[in-house]
Length: 281
Image 1: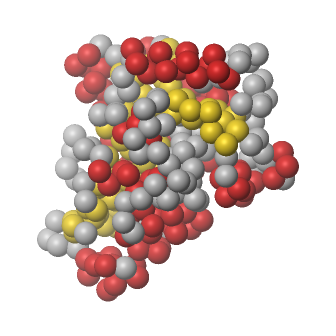
Image 2: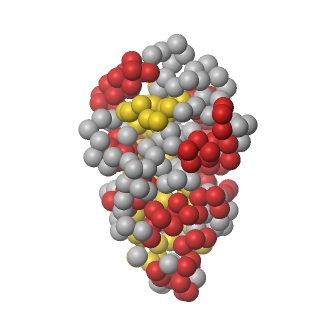
């Protein structure tokens, strides 16, 4: 993979073990993440014959998914695609998270295997056990995640269980998590947003070999600040990313706006860079 800086890259920092890259806008952020994920996918397919990859379903992922779908030299017939979460009360609706992935990725690239988290007419308990079985026998090579306005990963709202013994849970969604779905224009009102969802746990997400997290937009800036500048805590589930062995957080300038007032960002990102454009917090 080329070592040339990605187009639109403003700066890089490292927070504990987490690499953080900040780009000019949403398009550049999504493109950089897609390029890296595509590279990883090709490598895993070349080594193992197939790649198992898990996707978040959210408007924040649109640019990333669109760019990934256009990437060359990915044998999608060798891709096992997984969902990260799903509402339990909407099977069959166009507002399901499965439908989001179908529209923004699967219908374009046609993965060889697509595992839906909750099928139409399926009982949530049965679906949870079925998905645990899938994750147990098909370890995830790559996770493509986002961060919620409340700092959640998937639908692991605060306080998250960082040591969950299960791989999939039925979760009650907190108020901020449900409000975000309205902010994202996925539902017209809070009353329409489901109150529960199936979600892979933090344990399941952290087991992956490579974790790519794409977070654009000013609405996420406070969650990003807490993730990177406050102590790692279940009250900000995304902060656990700082302990992953191989994870990259991709931000646009708007999402990174709140970082400038803290730590080495006090003088602005330009002052924080060393000769390679990289700083460790």
